[in-house]
Length: 599
Image 1 (tube, helix red, strand yellow):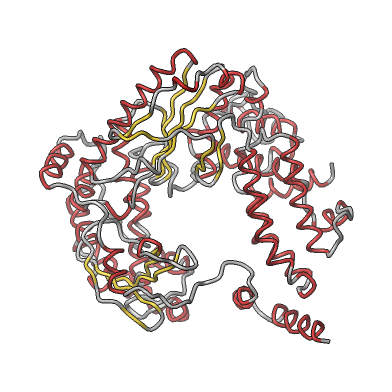
Image 2: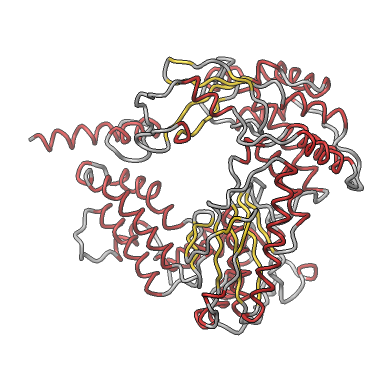
């Protein structure tokens, strides 16, 4: 009777709630990410000082030298960047794109603004126009509330808290306007490194991982090894020096009036920590891009972009995550490591000049290659990789943008990690299996479990059949949970009922969707798009011809055959012509899924 009552209570709560209410209720049952509302034993002002103090202070003489260097940089051959006129339509679009419900220092939230959007838009447009015209950022929009979130269940030090900044809602509208205009200018004039994938339209951790893993596989195809270094910058976003950032902006042909606006935007900021109804003292901020700011990711990308000019090795950036790598023959390992160390020395000099700090103890280096080539190395004689006279430890596995690389790209450690994460999350779901409606169980699996399986699955296409079977069993576990099946019950008919694909076809669908994006979206990263070539140039064909076929790059090994480039081309060319000729990504997705479900 108690179980029936519990089932009815949970069922009614879930069935009669909208999405936000449902998730809030489910969190009380231990499902999904819970918000830690426990008491904080630390003094809030001490926490605020910890959050607001820059991790490194650059010497004034060094900064003066850096600013002098920046002033002598050759400026790009383009007209200086100035703000464009802002319309009511621009402001309304920005307002409607904001989804946060948080209330900042101005005591405004979107729930208050949206009902009167049409009446407020002209007023907000005038405020933003005045800000851009007078090169002045409103002072009241520079104050932030900071919510301290524990990184662990029982934090024992100030460093075990993560700050979440809540800025005034209208400041986000102004930042959004500036971010769009500045980003467009940088893109049109190619002023950012093509190998920076952080916070850029069309770029992602997925594109970054495909690029680096593809490069390593193609090196394997040529019987080369790769030394890969993953560098850890300490609190990089909080370390940005205002004067140096403004100097960098000036070197990119940003007009003096816009520089003045950014000077006003960056300086004079303050924050206080808020926990429930308690507040800390206010602290002034003297460095760092504003935490939670719309402009901050772009400004940091601009700041760190200068680093790429001192590198000779291959590199890839995702915000402040730097991957540095070199390919080499076995007999050339000393030369390769020496050149890598030269680059690391250059990075050290650059970091000191620009006020950033690399933590060599948290950085990692690994040598990747085929098992055969790795066995030719004398491990006892591999040269040390050093940063500032500190040795960076070699490792057999390393987490890279959420994916575990090992020294021959076997993906065993990564898929084992996926299995552990899914099983851990599954335990909280299993307790409530008999109490939840079918559609809620489907929602939970799609929201909490499948993303763990899907994340960057297009970057490890050469995973073994054994590992793919392991992922298939994980998906089968999800299906059994949804339908209340026993451990050894067959799931094929239930998977068909859900209109889900097998793991292999699901992954192939993701490959094709990403390839379609690369081929037909102008925002796609050039470092991947340029790897694909049509059998007949696009200029001489249209999508309705039967010539929408891609060239298969020549390769020698099966490992290279498992790269995204090769696998994507083979899958694309195997599709019926009418699917390849789809006029939009949504139509393409629908047709490919229907095709795979029927085969």
